[in-house]
Length: 232
Image (cartoon, rainbow, N blue to C red; front, side, top):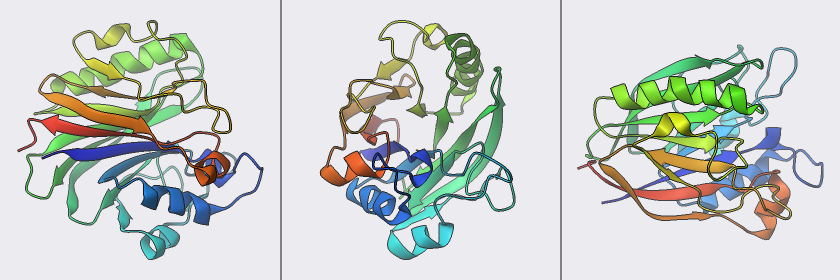
């Protein structure tokens, strides 16, 4: 059995054509055939950080539900812009909002999930900082959580790292996968969106979801990975 985990930076639902259109974001999400999706930039950046992607629209136009967790503000969808969607049949055992170190305020979500009779696993959804010094400190914090997880664990998200070899020093012993170029969506060259798995898990398939709509809907293309291992 495999579980498909995806990640998508929504860019606050503003596309490469500068139009704000949550409905086309939902169309891309539905096309991913994922069981769990980590989202970034789900809220507007200024003021009270209201949701850019309405939760009622998710419930009405998709098979996904937002797992209940902390919100940055009363009208936010996520925590520091992060949210996790699960397809009906996957349940959240626990979810925690993490504050990450760095010059710019950043956060991540750590969720304990169970998928249709499979063993529970830990998922960290993260959007890391723009400065490598901050990202290294953030990975130090996240690596501690991955190592302490009671069972299999993975991290997925927009890691904002252009290098193939630098910035991941804290992840010694983990597998780091870059499914492909995902940024900028209209002509992708940067492999900024990645997945990290702990020993006991393996990525059997992975990719970047690329379509004409996805190239317009956000400035990132979504990534996905089919995970197998100690999930039975």
